[in-house]
Length: 193
Image (tube, rainbow, N blue to C red):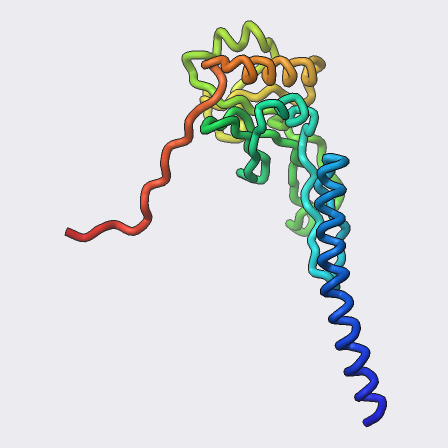
């Protein structure tokens, strides 16, 4: 009985301390992310913190910082908005493949996916003029179409960083060829007449 009482007291002290510790840890982590630009928090099952995914091609966000871009996760990637326009998606995923023997996903990392890089939001009308600026640009293959509005600056291209920074310059100059205003989502509840 005495042992159970001590354990309960210890638990209440630990919980009280951990609430304060959790608050301090979260504030420290937020401050540290602002200083370093990193978004990774240590995984701690006791505190319930999950590690954040790293930002793919973070140098692109650094180049757009003066425009105060906002980001949103999309399709397992990171969508970048400037004002009301979506201007690009940052993608750096490992291709997932299945083991032939068991039909399960392999634990070994696969080679980088061909669609990794910076996806530019544009229209078919602008492809040719953008291709003059970005010779390695092509349609995103993951959509399964030969030509798409989304064009990728492939991460495995020799001029990837230079091309991505050039795209940032065009966005900063408000180039009409890059960026789309997303369609408004319709209400899911239909009104009855």
